[in-house]
Length: 130
Image (tube, rainbow, N blue to C red; front, side, top):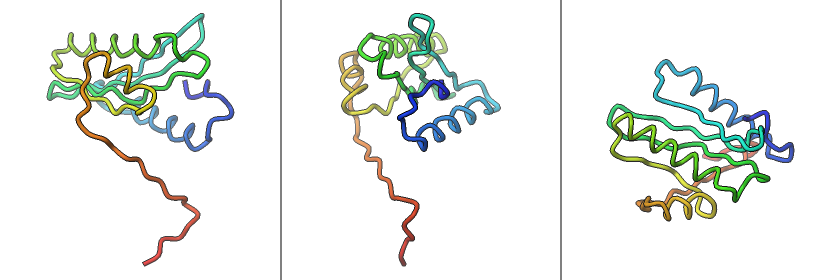
């Protein structure tokens, strides 16, 4: 899916997601799974889930291409991953959701907000001082 990202996306995001996908694929265990959502024969979305031995599934790294948003693809991929997790014996699901995009969808489907995370960045061109 990374190859299908829009060319105007930040190249750092592309590189980060590609590296993340390779880490998942190279993992020695098979708890992590990558799912593609397709519409009209085109890759429309990509999501990752990771089932832990503790019975918790982590829903991660969701990306829906802009031209396919608002068509229920993300919602369908959430439902599918939850069904797979239930079949594997999971009793809880955890997701880090974007406030404006995925969080409202998840809240409508029974997820509860338990905390807020802040992502911070610093340009790598600056030199850290003392």
